Length: 356
Ligand SMILES: *Cc1c(COP(=O)(O)O)cnc(C)c1O
Image (tube, rainbow, N blue to C red):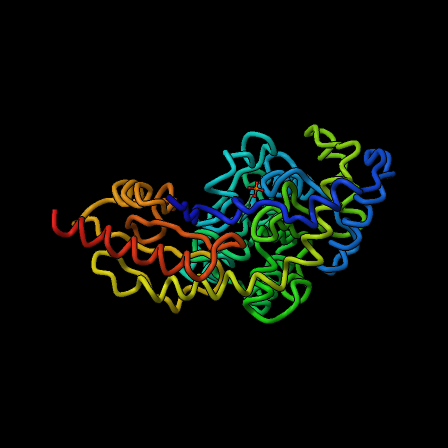
């Protein structure tokens, strides 16, 4: 049976060109700044994102943690979206490892932050009882909000409010190049007013491991110390960097194929009774649909799909407004036939469930 794996774009395997580049990579001690491949990747990443400097980190999660450690002190408060990855999926690292606390700002269903809620969430600067609000985090694309691409205009509006309140803006841009492709602009333009940005090599870009944290020269110097403290001073990491360079050179433009496939998938399934999805909300490679709880539940749908070779994931916790959701992510190993096949299988699974 052919497996159609729509669980995540993290399932992508490194390309043949990446494997060759990894084999051939010139390496050195990166802790001493002597890994030529790593230096080349970091320079390329900084240029693409439009910041002075960049630093390789082991994962997007580590990149966010290092960014927050570098921007904040203990007992600060940071503002994060109510549907953000930092809040939902990073093990309360902000409270346990940074020693700061997160305060949620409502995400709209399009992944933006509610501007009024954001504006009123900064702490007054006076009074010994208030923590300092030192950081705002914005996610782009927004994972739990249908992979929405957040516009440069919203990003700049959030940056202005953030800076006017004396805080810094960090972008969790795990899939920032998906946003750039969807919005037909440069990633650097989207994040131009942000103080730091993380993005993943290991998702749709098909890299094996790693993310980049980007910001000012001074910020990245601080971040290098925090990364080192977290045990991620990596020595001859150039092989990973070499794959990352291929990811940035070769794999960004093709993300539009994943977006087209996601759009087709959303349209194919939008009229299946028992599920709800508005294809107009699907801008990038994440397709989320709601399952009618009166008919069945997500665990049953996931298992039935799995029996027929289609792997999908559910959302842990509910997205704003409640409901039960299933997520499908398109990527390099999913082609048009897979999309049509997966759509057919979902249709038949839902038909079977309606009859029982
Ligand atoms: C995947 C993801 C991360 C974390 O990346 P890892 O490399 O899996 O740690 C962070 N933020 C968002 C929005 C993500 O989708």
